[in-house]
Image (tube, rainbow, N blue to C red):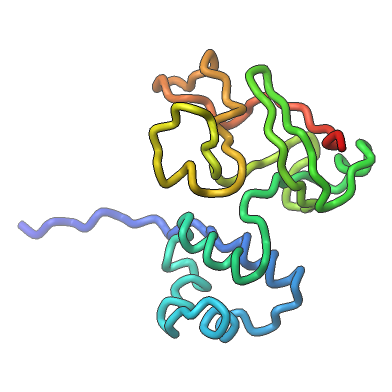
Length: 171
């Protein structure tokens, strides 16, 4: 009896960083740009752009470096920034019950009002971190904001729904 193949889900789209950065920087031909500026082969550039190559930290870092962007910006709705008198690109302090991180904020309509996102956990700078490579990467870590008393049903740290406040960073 032949095995029935398991249904496959389409790969999630992880290219929103790149799409938004291209729009902001007015890069009209991203495929050619990836080949020229990042040194990707034709195949790798195609796979990144179509979502066949899942975005991972290395790809985000390579593209961000070539674009002179920070891959660890806090994403926030423009109206929420305006209410707080914070400009797009400004430094903000994000504070939870257990910690504070300072990060650049990016305004995006993709975020719902009242919700922020710190998409990648870069820069594990806390003493005692046993992740040698992670301590060498610039940026901030969502781990510095997650509350160890808030666990999901499986006992893992809750990375979503962490209550935070956002304020302009003091000079």
